[in-house]
Length: 275
Image (cartoon, rainbow, N blue to C red):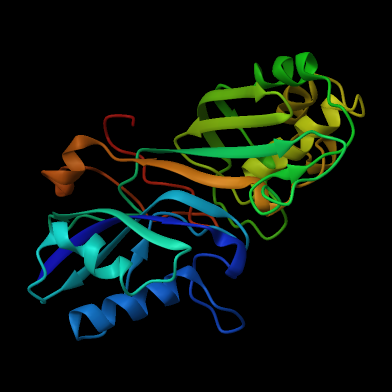
Protein backbone atom coordinates (compact mmCIF):
# COMPACT_ATOMS: atom_id res chain seq x y z
CA UNK A 1 0.00 0.00 0.00
CA UNK A 2 1.36 3.41 -1.01
CA UNK A 3 0.34 6.90 0.12
CA UNK A 4 0.17 9.41 -2.74
CA UNK A 5 0.01 13.20 -2.43
CA UNK A 6 -1.70 15.19 -5.20
CA UNK A 7 -1.69 18.90 -5.92
CA UNK A 8 -5.20 19.66 -7.20
CA UNK A 9 -6.39 22.78 -8.99
CA UNK A 10 -10.10 23.50 -9.49
CA UNK A 11 -12.65 26.08 -10.45
CA UNK A 12 -15.22 25.73 -7.70
CA UNK A 13 -18.06 27.49 -9.53
CA UNK A 14 -20.01 24.32 -10.32
CA UNK A 15 -19.45 22.57 -7.00
CA UNK A 16 -20.98 22.56 -3.54
CA UNK A 17 -17.53 22.93 -2.03
CA UNK A 18 -14.61 20.57 -1.54
CA UNK A 19 -16.10 18.11 0.93
CA UNK A 20 -18.34 15.26 -0.20
CA UNK A 21 -21.96 15.87 0.86
CA UNK A 22 -25.48 14.58 0.37
CA UNK A 23 -27.15 17.65 -1.12
CA UNK A 24 -24.72 18.63 -3.85
CA UNK A 25 -21.82 17.59 -6.06
CA UNK A 26 -18.47 18.22 -4.37
CA UNK A 27 -14.95 18.27 -5.76
CA UNK A 28 -13.96 15.45 -3.40
CA UNK A 29 -16.66 13.17 -4.82
CA UNK A 30 -15.60 13.77 -8.42
CA UNK A 31 -11.94 13.17 -7.59
CA UNK A 32 -12.67 10.01 -5.61
CA UNK A 33 -14.74 8.58 -8.46
CA UNK A 34 -11.93 9.24 -10.94
CA UNK A 35 -9.32 7.72 -8.63
CA UNK A 36 -11.46 4.67 -7.93
CA UNK A 37 -11.82 4.08 -11.66
CA UNK A 38 -8.10 4.54 -12.29
CA UNK A 39 -6.99 2.38 -9.38
CA UNK A 40 -9.77 -0.23 -9.81
CA UNK A 41 -10.58 -0.15 -6.10
CA UNK A 42 -12.51 2.29 -3.86
CA UNK A 43 -10.41 5.34 -2.98
CA UNK A 44 -11.08 7.91 -0.26
CA UNK A 45 -9.08 11.15 -0.28
CA UNK A 46 -8.16 13.60 2.48
CA UNK A 47 -7.73 17.27 1.56
CA UNK A 48 -5.76 20.01 3.24
CA UNK A 49 -8.75 22.41 3.37
CA UNK A 50 -12.53 22.30 3.11
CA UNK A 51 -13.26 25.10 0.68
CA UNK A 52 -16.87 26.32 0.49
CA UNK A 53 -19.21 26.27 -2.48
CA UNK A 54 -17.94 28.53 -5.26
CA UNK A 55 -14.42 28.85 -3.82
CA UNK A 56 -11.49 27.95 -6.07
CA UNK A 57 -8.14 26.28 -5.45
CA UNK A 58 -4.81 26.61 -7.19
CA UNK A 59 -3.17 24.20 -4.74
CA UNK A 60 -5.46 21.92 -2.79
CA UNK A 61 -3.24 19.15 -1.39
CA UNK A 62 -4.79 15.69 -1.19
CA UNK A 63 -3.52 12.33 0.01
CA UNK A 64 -4.88 8.82 -0.54
CA UNK A 65 -3.78 5.22 -0.13
CA UNK A 66 -3.65 2.73 -2.96
CA UNK A 67 -2.27 -0.67 -3.91
CA UNK A 68 -2.44 -0.03 -7.65
CA UNK A 69 0.67 -0.01 -9.83
CA UNK A 70 0.35 3.47 -11.40
CA UNK A 71 3.71 5.27 -10.96
CA UNK A 72 3.23 8.38 -8.76
CA UNK A 73 4.39 10.80 -11.45
CA UNK A 74 1.80 9.41 -13.90
CA UNK A 75 -1.28 10.25 -11.83
CA UNK A 76 -1.71 13.73 -13.40
CA UNK A 77 -1.80 12.19 -16.89
CA UNK A 78 -4.15 9.38 -15.90
CA UNK A 79 -6.56 11.44 -13.82
CA UNK A 80 -6.73 14.46 -16.12
CA UNK A 81 -8.13 12.14 -18.79
CA UNK A 82 -10.92 11.11 -16.40
CA UNK A 83 -11.72 14.40 -14.67
CA UNK A 84 -13.88 17.27 -15.97
CA UNK A 85 -11.98 20.27 -17.33
CA UNK A 86 -12.61 22.37 -14.19
CA UNK A 87 -10.55 19.98 -12.03
CA UNK A 88 -6.89 19.32 -12.83
CA UNK A 89 -4.09 17.42 -11.11
CA UNK A 90 -0.90 19.48 -11.32
CA UNK A 91 1.54 17.21 -9.48
CA UNK A 92 1.81 13.90 -7.63
CA UNK A 93 4.38 12.20 -5.43
CA UNK A 94 4.68 9.28 -3.05
CA UNK A 95 4.93 10.25 0.62
CA UNK A 96 5.55 8.32 3.84
CA UNK A 97 2.60 6.23 5.08
CA UNK A 98 2.07 8.50 8.09
CA UNK A 99 2.08 11.74 6.07
CA UNK A 100 -1.19 13.67 6.45
CA UNK A 101 -2.25 16.35 3.96
CA UNK A 102 -4.41 18.15 6.50
CA UNK A 103 -2.75 17.74 9.87
CA UNK A 104 0.87 18.44 8.90
CA UNK A 105 0.44 21.76 7.12
CA UNK A 106 2.58 24.63 8.41
CA UNK A 107 0.75 27.44 6.64
CA UNK A 108 -1.48 28.51 3.78
CA UNK A 109 -1.93 31.43 1.44
CA UNK A 110 -5.32 32.64 0.26
CA UNK A 111 -5.98 35.13 -2.52
CA UNK A 112 -9.14 37.21 -2.86
CA UNK A 113 -9.84 39.11 -6.09
CA UNK A 114 -12.09 42.13 -6.63
CA UNK A 115 -13.14 43.76 -9.88
CA UNK A 116 -13.55 47.42 -8.91
CA UNK A 117 -15.20 48.69 -12.05
CA UNK A 118 -18.53 50.33 -12.85
CA UNK A 119 -19.52 47.44 -15.09
CA UNK A 120 -19.10 43.76 -14.37
CA UNK A 121 -17.16 41.32 -16.52
CA UNK A 122 -18.53 38.33 -18.36
CA UNK A 123 -15.12 36.66 -18.19
CA UNK A 124 -14.34 37.37 -14.52
CA UNK A 125 -17.77 36.83 -13.00
CA UNK A 126 -16.84 33.47 -11.42
CA UNK A 127 -13.43 34.48 -10.07
CA UNK A 128 -13.82 38.12 -8.94
CA UNK A 129 -16.19 39.99 -6.65
CA UNK A 130 -17.66 42.85 -8.65
CA UNK A 131 -17.71 46.09 -6.63
CA UNK A 132 -19.07 48.86 -8.90
CA UNK A 133 -18.35 51.83 -6.58
CA UNK A 134 -14.76 53.23 -6.54
CA UNK A 135 -12.74 52.05 -3.54
CA UNK A 136 -10.20 54.23 -1.73
CA UNK A 137 -7.06 52.08 -1.63
CA UNK A 138 -4.81 53.97 0.87
CA UNK A 139 -7.08 53.38 3.91
CA UNK A 140 -7.55 49.76 2.83
CA UNK A 141 -3.78 49.24 2.77
CA UNK A 142 -3.45 51.06 6.10
CA UNK A 143 -5.99 48.66 7.61
CA UNK A 144 -4.01 45.63 6.47
CA UNK A 145 -0.98 46.82 8.44
CA UNK A 146 -2.79 45.75 11.63
CA UNK A 147 -3.18 42.09 10.59
CA UNK A 148 0.36 40.61 10.62
CA UNK A 149 1.36 39.05 13.90
CA UNK A 150 -0.33 36.76 16.40
CA UNK A 151 -3.81 37.89 17.45
CA UNK A 152 -7.13 36.60 18.71
CA UNK A 153 -9.22 36.53 15.53
CA UNK A 154 -12.51 35.66 17.28
CA UNK A 155 -14.27 38.55 15.50
CA UNK A 156 -13.14 37.18 12.12
CA UNK A 157 -15.09 33.92 12.36
CA UNK A 158 -18.50 33.42 10.74
CA UNK A 159 -21.39 31.80 12.55
CA UNK A 160 -20.97 28.05 12.46
CA UNK A 161 -17.26 28.08 13.19
CA UNK A 162 -16.28 25.58 15.87
CA UNK A 163 -12.65 26.46 16.60
CA UNK A 164 -11.50 25.67 20.12
CA UNK A 165 -9.01 28.51 19.92
CA UNK A 166 -9.26 31.62 17.74
CA UNK A 167 -5.63 32.74 18.08
CA UNK A 168 -3.89 32.75 14.70
CA UNK A 169 -0.66 34.12 13.22
CA UNK A 170 -0.70 36.11 9.98
CA UNK A 171 2.66 36.75 8.31
CA UNK A 172 1.48 38.54 5.16
CA UNK A 173 -1.51 40.74 4.32
CA UNK A 174 -1.15 42.73 1.14
CA UNK A 175 -3.44 44.50 -1.35
CA UNK A 176 -2.17 44.66 -4.92
CA UNK A 177 -3.84 46.46 -7.79
CA UNK A 178 -3.60 46.35 -11.57
CA UNK A 179 -6.08 48.89 -12.87
CA UNK A 180 -9.54 47.83 -11.69
CA UNK A 181 -8.31 44.41 -10.49
CA UNK A 182 -7.60 44.34 -6.75
CA UNK A 183 -5.84 41.29 -5.29
CA UNK A 184 -5.79 40.61 -1.57
CA UNK A 185 -3.10 38.12 -0.49
CA UNK A 186 -3.18 36.72 3.06
CA UNK A 187 -0.74 34.12 4.44
CA UNK A 188 -0.75 32.57 7.87
CA UNK A 189 -0.38 29.44 9.96
CA UNK A 190 -4.14 28.85 10.15
CA UNK A 191 -7.49 30.38 9.28
CA UNK A 192 -10.94 30.42 10.86
CA UNK A 193 -14.23 29.73 9.09
CA UNK A 194 -14.77 32.47 6.44
CA UNK A 195 -11.87 34.48 7.91
CA UNK A 196 -10.43 35.67 4.59
CA UNK A 197 -13.86 36.51 3.19
CA UNK A 198 -14.59 38.60 6.30
CA UNK A 199 -11.26 40.41 5.85
CA UNK A 200 -12.15 41.10 2.19
CA UNK A 201 -15.65 42.28 3.03
CA UNK A 202 -14.35 44.57 5.75
CA UNK A 203 -11.72 46.01 3.40
CA UNK A 204 -14.45 46.87 0.92
CA UNK A 205 -16.35 48.81 3.58
CA UNK A 206 -13.15 50.59 4.63
CA UNK A 207 -12.58 51.51 0.99
CA UNK A 208 -16.10 52.96 0.88
CA UNK A 209 -15.45 54.90 4.13
CA UNK A 210 -18.15 52.98 5.97
CA UNK A 211 -15.61 51.66 8.46
CA UNK A 212 -12.40 53.30 9.77
CA UNK A 213 -8.91 52.07 8.79
CA UNK A 214 -8.38 50.76 12.34
CA UNK A 215 -11.42 48.47 12.17
CA UNK A 216 -9.25 45.34 12.40
CA UNK A 217 -7.37 46.71 15.42
CA UNK A 218 -10.65 47.50 17.16
CA UNK A 219 -11.96 43.99 16.47
CA UNK A 220 -8.88 42.45 18.13
CA UNK A 221 -9.93 44.27 21.31
CA UNK A 222 -13.70 43.81 21.17
CA UNK A 223 -13.62 40.27 19.71
CA UNK A 224 -17.03 41.13 18.24
CA UNK A 225 -18.05 40.12 14.72
CA UNK A 226 -20.27 43.24 14.68
CA UNK A 227 -17.19 45.47 14.52
CA UNK A 228 -16.24 44.09 11.10
CA UNK A 229 -17.86 44.24 7.68
CA UNK A 230 -19.79 41.82 5.55
CA UNK A 231 -18.61 38.38 4.46
CA UNK A 232 -17.46 38.78 0.86
CA UNK A 233 -18.95 36.35 -1.70
CA UNK A 234 -17.13 33.06 -2.31
CA UNK A 235 -16.42 33.59 -6.03
CA UNK A 236 -13.39 35.84 -5.37
CA UNK A 237 -11.61 33.43 -3.01
CA UNK A 238 -8.81 31.07 -4.00
CA UNK A 239 -6.75 28.66 -1.91
CA UNK A 240 -3.42 29.56 -3.47
CA UNK A 241 -0.74 27.66 -1.58
CA UNK A 242 -0.43 24.99 1.10
CA UNK A 243 2.90 24.66 2.87
CA UNK A 244 4.49 21.81 4.80
CA UNK A 245 7.70 21.63 6.84
CA UNK A 246 10.32 19.64 4.96
CA UNK A 247 10.32 17.00 7.71
CA UNK A 248 6.73 16.16 6.78
CA UNK A 249 8.10 14.42 3.69
CA UNK A 250 10.95 12.62 5.40
CA UNK A 251 9.96 12.00 9.02
CA UNK A 252 6.30 12.93 9.69
CA UNK A 253 6.32 11.18 13.05
CA UNK A 254 8.83 13.72 14.38
CA UNK A 255 6.31 16.54 14.01
CA UNK A 256 3.93 17.18 16.89
CA UNK A 257 0.47 17.84 15.52
CA UNK A 258 -3.17 17.85 16.55
CA UNK A 259 -6.43 17.54 14.73
CA UNK A 260 -7.89 20.71 13.20
CA UNK A 261 -10.33 22.53 15.43
CA UNK A 262 -12.42 24.50 12.96
CA UNK A 263 -15.47 23.69 10.88
CA UNK A 264 -13.71 24.22 7.57
CA UNK A 265 -10.53 22.37 8.52
CA UNK A 266 -8.29 25.40 8.17
CA UNK A 267 -7.00 25.35 11.73
CA UNK A 268 -3.86 23.48 10.80
CA UNK A 269 -1.34 21.54 12.79
CA UNK A 270 1.22 23.46 14.78
CA UNK A 271 4.64 21.90 14.35
CA UNK A 272 7.03 21.59 17.26
CA UNK A 273 9.45 23.97 15.59
CA UNK A 274 6.83 26.72 15.45
CA UNK A 275 5.92 26.50 11.74
